[in-house]
Length: 267
Image (cartoon, helix red, strand yellow):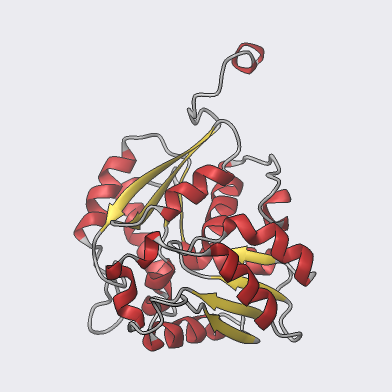
């Protein structure tokens, strides 16, 4: 360890390597995870182009079938000596509904093996909220979530005893708000996100009944404002990528606190 301590930082994950399935055309999940990851923890992405959920149910909702990209990514991850793997897609958990998270984890485990800790973003967000004592979160969703996605998110949280005290779909601003939510990402909204505006909107809209905030969506750029929101609101703030990094670190046995990204990672 003394010799390692004298070496420069090369982002090699000798302490933990975390694999993350992400949307194929997104850059936010990797950027945010690398920003938050402590030294000697590395992040490795596999890209998925399937629609939500990434593992659809059969007609009887008894089992799920992994999208081809999930299967291919699993086989690659299995050779990488990872500590943990997460299905980093809030929408898949929301749309998949009750039981989906556990079903997809079981399918992934058949490929990855029992030694790699597995999770989904839905499971990670649930665990993070409960860890912080949040039972009535203020749900914040990206502007590209349409009404059906919003309804699925609200139902998912209610079904897991985390009934939101309110919700906010971010106003994307001038030049964007005239487009339908489902059209925003195709027009480049994912690479034109305004986190300062998001901060102001959350601070203004968070109801007093909320005992915390959940910012859902791994493609929703927000970790830069988590600390400021917690200071201003006086309540814990959980984001999708923050929750999955926290869960991955815990499952890998990495107990080092991470500062600057909310109380969840400070330990």
